[in-house]
Amino acid sequence: MRTSLSDLWRWEETVGRGRYTTFGILLVLLKYNLDRFLAAIWFGRSWTIFHYLQPGGGLAIDSLIPGDKVFFAMMVLLAIPFVWVGVVLTVRRLRDLDWPLWVVILFFVPFLNLLFFAMLSVLPGARMGEDPAHAPGDDEGILGWLLPRSRWGSAATAVLLTSSSGMSLLWLSTEFLQRYGWGLFVGLPFIVGLSAVLLFGYRQRRGLGECLGVSFLAILILAGFAFALALEGLICLLIAAPLAGAVGLFGGLIGYGIQRCTPRRDRLPPIITSLFLFTPLLMGAEHVARPEPPLLVVRTSVDIHAPPEKVWRQMVAFEQIPEPTEWLFRLGIAYPVTATIRGEGVGAVRHCVFSTGTFVEPIEVWDEPRLLKFAVTVNPPPMKEWTPYPHIHPAHLDGFLVSEGGQFRLMRLEGGRTRLEGTTWYRHRMWPVAYWRFWSDSIIHQIHGRVLRHIKQQAEAVMAEASPWLHPATGF
Image (cartoon, rainbow, N blue to C red; front, side, top):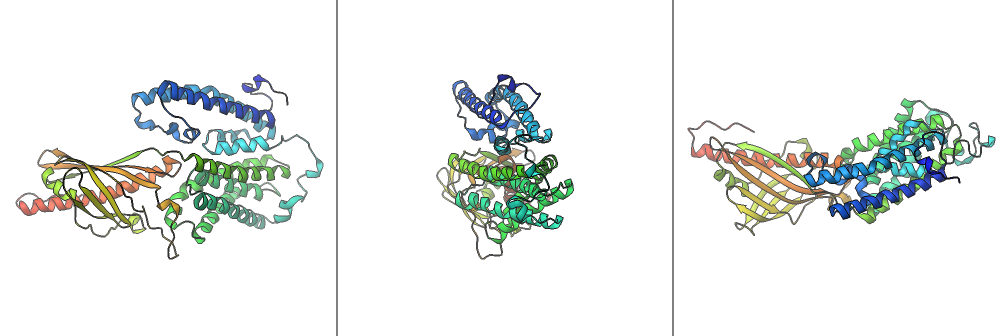
């Protein structure tokens, strides 16, 4: 294996799997240790390999404090030369495989770039060891025996093989490892969509539309298996569907490009094998590392036609809220029912009853009638899964969406009105954080809104009874 440092910046020619793998491992180790040194010595921060799986390294880019801005800028500057070298090597490796160069976009996708690197590290070059015995018309090997010649038969077999194989990885992640991370929601749908298309195009090249159709169908069948075998309920599957579907189609698009540019069928089994072997290793790494999820915050407010003193009484504890009409809660997402409190002042304990159980909330700040702040020591399940079975309890119902604290802030407005702001601090242990935060933030806003509207109605009703000559309060 001839190795030259000029391989790191020259766009011309190709690079074989040996040099690509060697340079890749060395550069990853160098970059990781430089990042660790920079984070620890200059900024007093810890840095792990899983920070690379979080947008912005786990920093909230839209609300960076001054210290975070400097840290983020330094990390970006340090990454630029490594990104350049990585793209150069990957483009040359793709050229060596006769793959379309646009597949280099996988280099920039978290988690998938690890699977991509594994693929490029094991596949021989397109012109390496050419053998007429492996011409496209041959039926040698187990795939030639398994895959029918007809278009529909080939599609059905590809879908069933990949979705059933994907079930083993789904079970490994959810039941055995109990991890809902990148491997499950990004790696699994990608390799299922990609592998389905590669199998579908094993005998002859297929069109883009039918390749995307096969990849989407494979993901759909996989979800159906998970529902039928009681591994997941309908709610979680529906929430995960946009991410899994998009990643599966992306895998299908990559598979389409590969099968259009790979005339030799003996190249396909190593691709599929490397993906299905490497993904469990990454799932296991997630399980061992257990990266700490970021602390997230959601704030919701409402204006009330009543002074803070009246709102405070309705806010600290409130009577039962009528049954919800929102489709989200009717599907099974936990919703607030009533709240009681034992004691008064710091040290009192508030109990907020939800449809799935009770939050226990010790009071930390009692500043009447301005601020009520509390911790959360007990969290009930976030939902009741919709399922035809008498009972299922996926691991994500315990400890994956955890409220750590909350508060009510009352701000006095003109005209005897009050702005009531509810805040929740929480973590969820499902990745990618940005995707799942979209759903969890939306759900918590809905929960806030249900409570705040009820407090508004009760406080304004009290004001209307006490002062019937005043104008009626507007609805929220």
